[in-house]
Image (cartoon, rainbow, N blue to C red):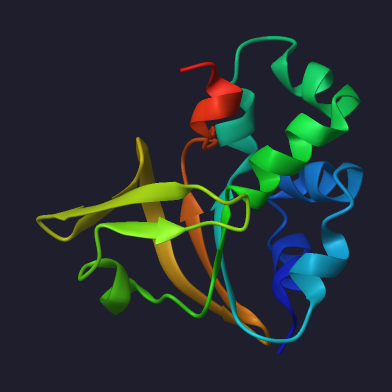
Length: 139
């Protein structure tokens, strides 16, 4: 099996996420052995950001690192785990809210559109929005 990064690259719809992880110097973290859970926004999710946001983030590496790390949780958290928990600690240091209603899972405000893409070093859940940690979102 491929690792988180190789799996995301091979899927073909996470180009922006991979570009952001590269710019944030987090590729090695995402390739590291052990278990990680990646809440992966699609290219379409990044396209929903206000115009200019992504370009600004690619120039603000500390902020970009926080945002990318906010999409990663420690451990191998599969869909059957997600329905039993209501939050997950991220590598960024803060918590994402997990909500499961009628078989649909949400991470903060993002819908999980596909779960349990298994990799050598963890699992990917595809989400339809980019997650913003509170301190970055300015809340």
